[in-house]
Image (cartoon, rainbow, N blue to C red; front, top):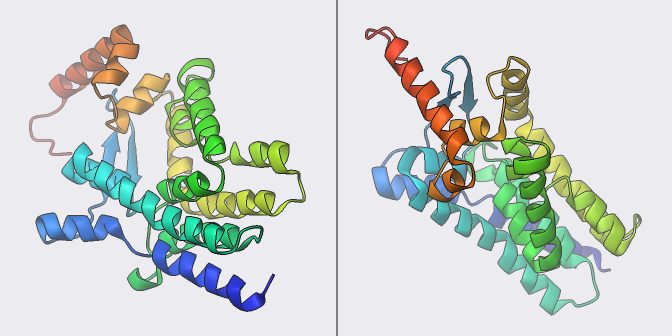
Length: 254
């Protein structure tokens, strides 16, 4: 491995990862910036503040279509350069270096005073170029475990990232470059996501999010297809929300 190419791969991944498509899309649409979102649990008893500049923040601010657009752009900004290094230097780990650097750029972008997102879509983009089967299996397993066995909506959403570690261990070995890549992106993700995770765990401990559906509803991801999976539970959540709304003081703007 040549040090110059390794540095180039790291710089490419970081600098492209640091492009904030969330800011670009919001600015083009509204002329403003990505807003901080304050989410409320269905029972009205708890709140979670989303400060990350991400596709999720754009979805909460502008709606699902724009959130999907930003998510797709974030995937591509890691997928394309990673694939490029893989094709240019087959058999060399430069593509892994590029993919590992991308979420660090996304989470701590030099262009925006190091304030960025959490890197979930960027990690997915890199994985699709490195091992698309691993991307599908880890995210699919996390969704299945989170929404059924563990009944935790957040695990269903983000659990694919920690599952990269056992996947890479099983597929490539514990001392492989792929394993180092999985460890690096997990560090980037856990450090950036820690504030939101702490809030989420506090809501779980306080009983504000007793089921996966409650978490999905709080994050405003209870779309039609999700509601069809558990219609009775979402009906209960709607009743809970209606009751909370009806018992609020009309003067209360929060």
